[in-house]
Length: 359
Image 1 (tube, rainbow, N blue to C red):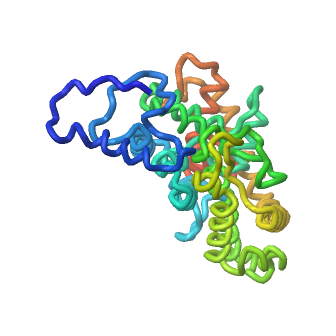
Image 2: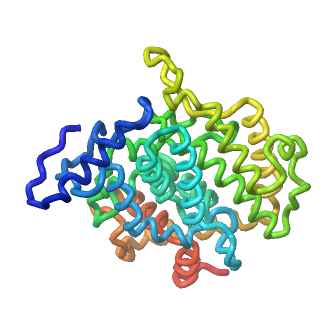
Image 3: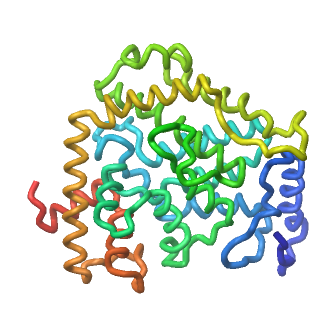
């Protein structure tokens, strides 16, 4: 992407971004490079000391939607324990796993980190229960990955969006996947290998920390997990993550460009058949024993009740929409959905109670 010249005099600082971009040239031939980005929707003067992808990462970290992730559910609704995973800690774990894979494959860590930090900012309160509730209420449905993209494009920064690069926005949109298979394409394959890393790193993170939370809640013991999955992936949290990360790196080694003919098919980020089968078995087990556990189903019903109540209330009382996280020219149902999707668990519960929902 052609960059406009820096208009201010900064002395030796003017060389920082150029030096960082030169380092990107040393990455794998298949890595994304910030100076080759497809750009932003609104052109901007480049940063003195950061690449375009580093700039995106910083904008995400400093935005309101990112901060609210600390009070949004991962699996257990509004948990009282200090060590349960929230949407924020999930995001940080995903970013760490994704960066480890990107570094090992000589790909762009800055791009990987930026899209990982932003991938779940559109999640509703109450996790996937809240998401399914809004999907029932909106004519066109609701998907958290689409909402995450909407957050960074249209809702943040007083309705101006964060004006992120195309590559980060694409990775955010295409991180989502179908339930049936950890390798399912679902929303399509990201055009960057860094975006493909995010999709798998997200699964590695949530599956393993959800197991840890279920054990913490007394729903599971390590020995309850499928025997074959434990044999292939390991018998502890750290062993499973380590096995999966190393498997992804080894299976995707062509992404480094080492020994790969540049004229052939471009490499893909994937995992071995054995690891994928064991991971899918573990996911099926988690759906049967945790995600669709009787107590979790009751919590999900409670969450749906709160979301439906709030949606009905605000569509009947649009004057009560006081958030700056909606766009006044959008249809009312879209504004209500944006407002509810931006809520944290406790805010949604308290709002519903204050507006008259019976406990």
